[in-house]
Amino acid sequence: MPSGFNIGPITVRFYGLLIVGGAMLATWLASRRARRYGENPEAAWDMLFWVFIAGVIGARLWHILTPPASLVKQGITTGYYLTHPLDAIAIWHGGLGIPGAVIGGVVALYLYTRKHGMSFATWTDIIAPCLALAQIIGRFGNFFNQELYGMPTQLPWAIYIDPAHRLPEFMDQAYYHPLFAYEGLWNLMNIAVILWVERRFATQRKPGDLFLVYLIIYPIGRFLLEFLRLDPSPVAGLNINQTLMAVVALAAALALFLRHRPQAQSSQPTA
Image (cartoon, rainbow, N blue to C red; front, side):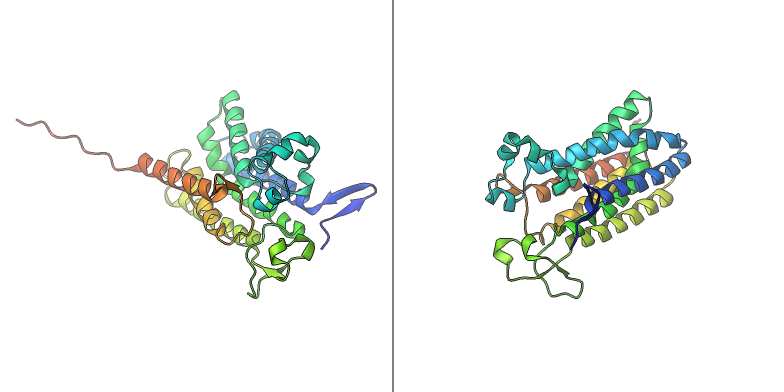
């Protein structure tokens, strides 16, 4: 399966096109949503560069710090990347971690909104469904790279993986779970829930609530999908992605609960 095409001496990879395309579409949607929130729609385009670059840097750093087990077996560890800077920046070969992308993007968003006197919490709500949309589009780059697939399966929607992209212990297995597609469908549901909460609880919501909903739903899906993943990222004996997702989902759920917990009524003074 081709992973891209050539324009003269330049190779254009579908993976990169989908990531950029997803970011552009998400920004367009954010600009439309910003108007409904009383914010300047142009701000979405102004912050795109900073949020996108920080997201890519964060995604690559996450990969470098938490390489999957298959790369570790080949000697491509964090230490390797630190001593081979050209390989460390070679994102065109894949190797971007969504947890790092979200962290990097959120940090950039916080710094941008603080510098321009904007509400960080409001903008996280504006961006929440847009972020999930960008993930749906970007994830399908894994299809062209033949990566992020799950356990072997004979289900009708299984995808064929070329031998060159299979793990050594699964060379005799040709068809696998398309984890990127499962994650895309989960994110589609995430968008639907966020938009439902946005309308259903319009008068009860507080700024930042929609982003907390995103931080509950996406990590739950990612946590579950890690059980199907063949190539996890082990850190100190733990699947770091799955562990982080559990922590984030629980923390976001707790934060949402505490923000909206019923306030205890003040005790009446006794006579």
